[in-house]
Amino acid sequence: MSYKTDRARVSGLGSAKDGTHHFWNQRLTSVALIPLTVLFVIPLAYNLGGDHARVVEAYSHPFNALVAVLFLVTGFLHLQQGLQVVIEDYVHGPALRTALIVGNTLFCWLFGLTGVFAVAKIAFGA
Image (cartoon, rainbow, N blue to C red; front, side, top):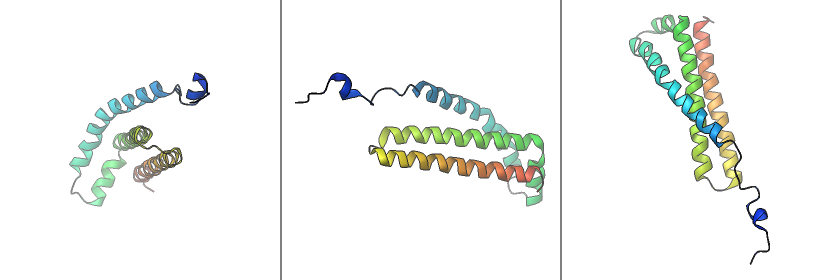
């Protein structure tokens, strides 16, 4: 038998008031990825099997570089949000959940920024 009040029993377990924002961000990135994927795959497929100089020439074009950067940023943001939902729903220990969410965020930022840096290096000819 517990002597806690109803409020004390559920304290800290309620809504964080952030679920709707997260939901809409995930939907927005998924819709944005539809045209970005098509625009990213077209020059990629066209240059598939080409030599290094041909690929560098294609991604030196500002439009292709911009599409590649937008695709990478949007894709890794969408990945981070999706994995965070899975971690929050299926990982039960609070310490492990926090560690996985931090690791997920660092992983997505690291690889997203690495991709953006690679495209920028090609685009600016460094």
